[in-house]
Length: 313
Image 1: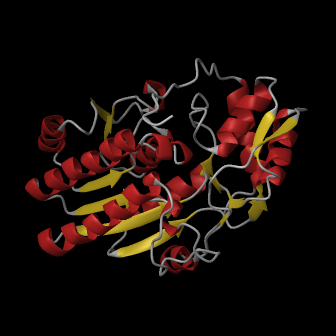
Image 2: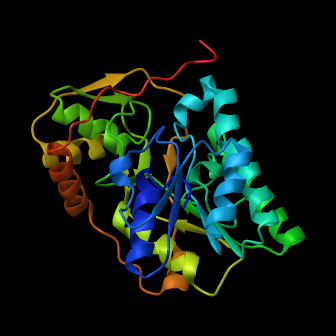
Image 3: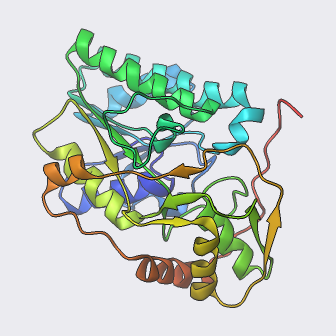
């Protein structure tokens, strides 16, 4: 599991371990934490842009299945950090793909993103042509295309998972540019106002981490492969409603509105493909999910916020 010290990756690794699989984790702790790595997982600590280290880990771990969760994922910030975004996402992917081919890995499950849809008609379905509108989404669309090519040329089994707006315990609350639920919760628990870009009428659907990890683990280890699948929550709500729900879970807080920014206005997915693969798909309601996250976050020492070096100012 790449990115196995991060939010989604650590939950997926833990889920696979409980199902009896041997799990190895690759992470450099740039966006994750040592505390997130399951104690029974083998850990390789390095950056995926180091191709020699990637080959070393594959040689030692001899994986049958690779679940690629690692990514630079500050989507809105990627407009000002293209070089970093492309290096971390595309060079890392190239190193993984090469190692998969060299070491005869049977299957790759790649975590893409809803960002590949851009401003397509909502709700997004898997048959839409990708039309990303930011560098982050472009790297995910490119990875998807190359994974298909890897399968065609090398015979590697592949699954592309497009999760969206995942939240819950274990999320990185120290990153000021990633994951609006985490940003709102950090602000509320720190006594700061919640910051909304524009009127907050942008619409998203939010996905509880346990639901997402359970789905990824089930899809990764099932017989079927060679498909794209959306994974996440079903309830689309505007951002101002999300702010209200976070405040309900954490306690009183103010809300301030910042100038609008360039972003896709409305983005949520259908999950018919997911239900066809897994049967009845039950999701955690946001009251329960946000409550669990708030209880976890209240006892957390967040630490200093992550800083980024802008390439364009």
